[in-house]
Image (tube, rainbow, N blue to C red; front, side, top):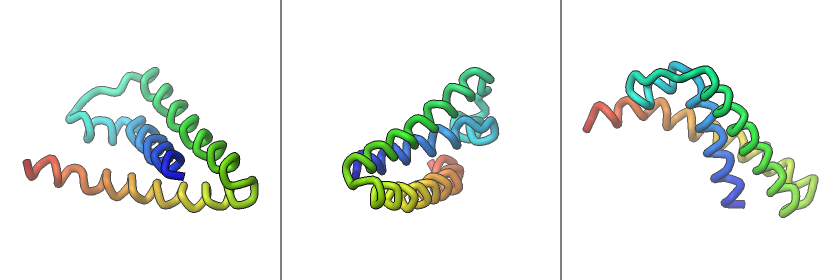
Length: 93
């Protein structure tokens, strides 16, 4: 289950980082090429689906989907809160 959580966090991070505004905040005014953004979105979606596959195979179809849905929202919140906190952490150093 920990691997699935890590995949979910990485997937949401890629999806968030593929947005030009978030990318420029993370990379400090970096430019996000269009192809890179699309590739990041596909990779993020693949990681989210990979976590679903791992949970369904490990926990069974009914509980695996339920666990994935719960972990999906928890990991999305964790990434959103981290991105909200990130500018303050960078400016403090």
